[in-house]
Length: 290
Image 1 (tube, one colour):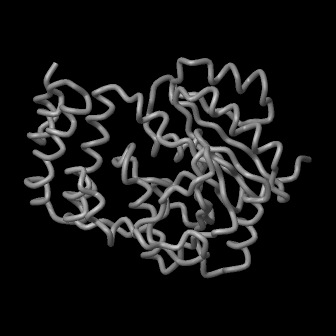
Image 2: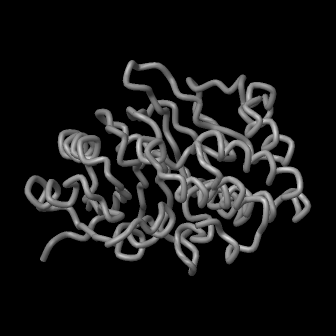
Image 3: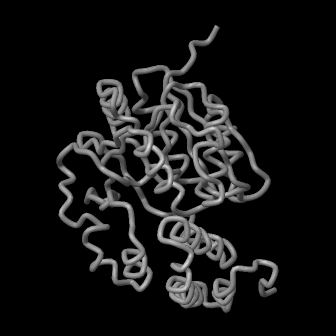
């Protein structure tokens, strides 16, 4: 009988075939010492990702969606079949470095008060990515989506010391290890936040249960950064911006939409070069533009 894994590594993929290939190679070149399994949930990729996994990584547990079901749903699917005591969420645009997964796992095991851990994210050139933040206020959101994020110093934790292991509120879920026991009955992520802010919501849930979240400086991975969302078509971007409105509506009050809707609408029209941003100006989705 096969030994049950102690660690389940979950990756959601959408059209990042080459980067996913590099990630999977790095996992098997630098494998965790504990028994582990790798689960890839593919969101309807059309770039040969599924065929690549089947031909090169027969040991990967593969879940195939016919369409893009979003980041939250895909990770929930992976978590629902995971068998490990710990879950490691990895972006498909990452590569693990030697010993990093072991370091994260050793830390969470040695600290029973810690429910989740994150690590240092590096750009491909070796520079450090600023990946830890505080929970955002409405003012932080306004500054961020007006492209004035440099003024949101509290939120962006501009003085954060990435060389020191410490408690954090909201690390990026690009590389995020947590106890499987913390997964909610409804799933790992809130699927209403299908693409954005689901990781922020998850961190708030973990802390609300009395657990700590630690950033572990000794562990690091390479992160290429938002490769899927950069290629997102206008309608997928519209869903992303609706996620933003939903999150702030929950945490900053329904009136927050009066402030953020026009900001996000204009931002979406500029980024997508289309009028689809007008759909953010009313909440009734039945009135969507063709």
